[in-house]
Image (cartoon, rainbow, N blue to C red; front, side, top):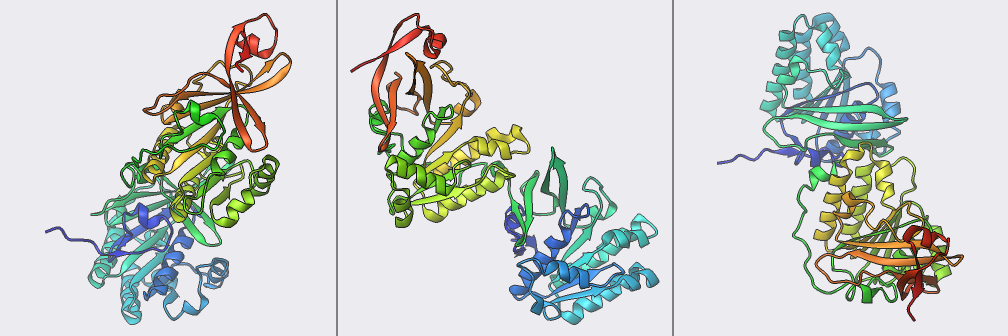
Length: 487
């Protein structure tokens, strides 16, 4: 008969997900990382969360200085509760015991304090200092083993904090049940924090590096989307009804509309009408079938102004609950934070239409760009499983002409549908065109059509018929032909 491990929730968003359920009750963990990586913040965040759930925590430091500076720093975080100190969270320093009497006396003192305060969690901050006091590696292993056996017997979870480098593998690693590594490094000129569960005895864990950030709320961990959602959370949505794009005349090219719960890539240069297309798509949302705008370039104010100029009531959609706007400026974003934020909004608001304005925003936030295909695959599969009809834009540099209909095969192969917006000079006038390149399991009109932006947004007009010409404009230069428009 399989025995289920008893779990202890950490209260750190994302950490329990990486640990596949939380810390194991009665287990011992090493939390390892360089100074400034967030070990103390992580341990105290866990401590105060467990205290709020009825736990009792002994926080032991092996430092010479008092705890006043520690409390000053903790007071800047939302999780800190001053009233819990001395009532549910007990801070003591055993530096003098270690210095004067050694490791054996330290173990005895810790056992006495744990029993006296009936603690469910022990945090020992300064394992490296205890190691320096040991005469051999065996002494260190014995010290860890004695504390671990006591904790396992009493059901007390232990966190050993150490400032050793994450690539150091020490004797005590073999003794503990888990190792949580915190890593802070420079990626170019920006700082990136990443977490890894390098050991998890008797329990699964999400492998690899997971980004985290530290804010006034404490630590937030963002499991890698492709690791968490290796398979989507539900079966794919298979409803047969077509989805109207809101673009007048486009439905005829699409065979009635987009396939339901599909992902459409809308590619085109700047100014070709991608965001306008998205506003048309979002304008059909209702409170019962809401939509989400997830963008990087247009602030909510600018998006509303664009809607007013086109005659699309963005504010009205927001007031009715039909539309949610999430804006992430193109500054220093985290790729997995964006993915989790998007999926959380989809689930919370039961989104059925999603417009992602600028796939480049994900690309620019990736520290390791080689993982983008896997990230997009996990994100797209999950959106399909949630029954969301998605349109995502990608800016391409092909500013003139109609050539280059498949510039990004790696991305386009992940998408169910591909729609192109193009611009070209025709007889001295800049014209816009739209064409459908790919649709999942559907027939479609592959011809380019004229497209017009005006009141009501985007409108598909006449079919293009290409004839021979010697006109030296941008269109002719790229195709060798000049377009004529069917009436």
